Length: 162
Image 1: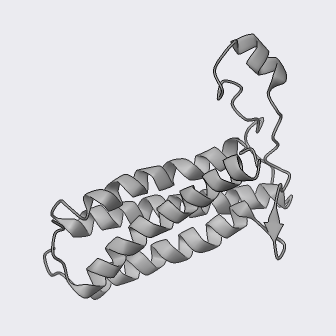
Image 2: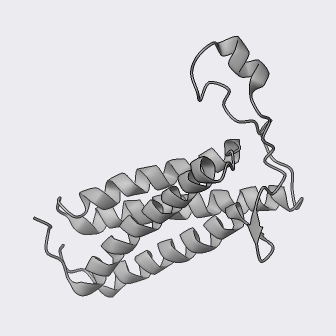
């Protein structure tokens, strides 16, 4: 049974659950369904969404709800800001901070063979875009907007306990 909350907190709770679920679902679909291998910075964007998903799920069953939703929204915002940095690297606005290669151990097996046969996925090259915006750029747009909406909804509820 879910913890009952007011309407604005209920909407914020759903937002912080659905945004990272959709972002991670899209990321894994593009990876395993369409062969877009993630670079290192792509993985950096996934980790805060995973973190947010855990706190968002807890917000349905554990009280107090408001801090759990706020922490989940902070995780979503973090992913969006990493996406902004990654998009800037892709568009050549600034230089990245890593070698930007995929993990060679993702499939298991012989480590030396995995290293030798690992695809080199560069963080500074756009693998796919829509309307000139890369996946990292879309993550920035949707994650940042969603997190700000969740924070806005949290403030609508005032200081009521949830």
